[in-house]
Length: 145
View 1 (cartoon, one colour):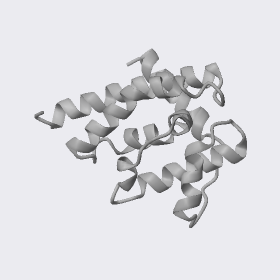
View 2: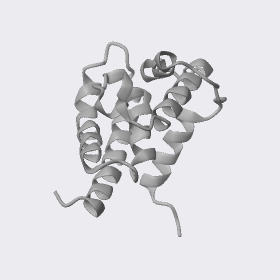
View 3: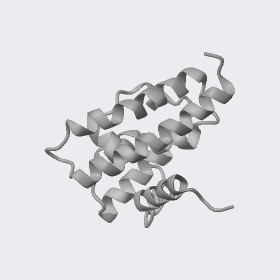
View 4: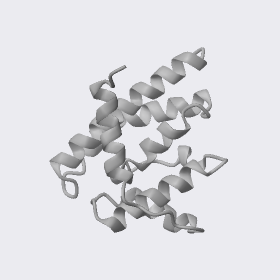
């Protein structure tokens, strides 16, 4: 079976966001969430984003779901990847939160032109759209409302 363009695009974005990073043992929650605002492609930011993603995915309470995202958090992709990674474990309400976030991401990103490039905004909006579709599909399979 040949991968779809959409799946290929998501895979490329994921690899670009997470490649080249090393695992960071025992990082505090505060430091872990620093990656939410780190949007450049330096090795330092990639490492911070990976640490933040590991922290979020490893949080059994999923407290991050209830935290309000910033435009930089959308641009970093961390929250969206966390929703993608945990979609099979999320409650119906949490899936709804993720879908709303993905739907709201493009408008939020457009307000951040002072610190995001047009390319960052475009890539992040595409990622949000793709993950929004995945969360909608998962919600449709498991949730009645």
